[in-house]
Length: 264
Image 1 (spheres, rainbow, N blue to C red):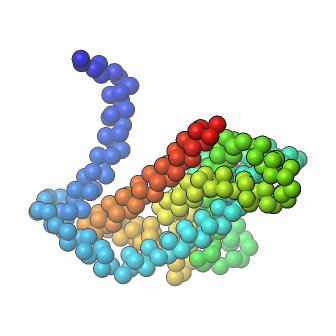
Image 2: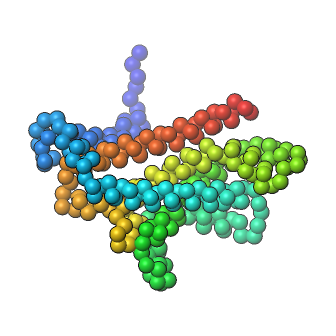
């Protein structure tokens, strides 16, 4: 039985090919024995060995991990509290606050970067590691809050009310009943925000001070004179790491939704 090829399916295949074919080419040439990417000289792991011996890359990776972990950790607490507050409480200006809190999701990164730099300059705050972390918290907070909010909409509010009826304080009901139910959403949001923070270039370049060199800035400084084979290898490693974290976040979200449907 033959399947008919439709225009939507053909267009989708072309778009996926357009997006992923360059990544495939990048991965292939990361194993090229030649120093130049214009011709193939045979399979080699030389550039992966050079990558793992590059101290500057590892120093930049440590800076990126520090920025991402601290920004995500603080944003996880604030984003979860923000999502709970917006979902459960009524207050004046709630709609305006909700719109402003989710604004970083649609505002271009360059606008956030310039606005943050202008604010730091006007307040005479010197650029440092903490200014980068603060800038990353702007979008990490919004992404985590969105994921947690979507999880909140599917929870049974009667469980928290039952805990209050049984003598639990509001704080105990939140920490012992609500937060455990939100844990998969919080975890998925943190993974998403972590990947975005690790990959950010624009905001980091505007807010990083002397002595702070996140990995995207190190990569950008090297590719301005041409893409080297070790950068191909690094790009493959980063793509695989981001894909694994994104897949893990999606798996956690799927398992939590499936468990919730089974309990309903």
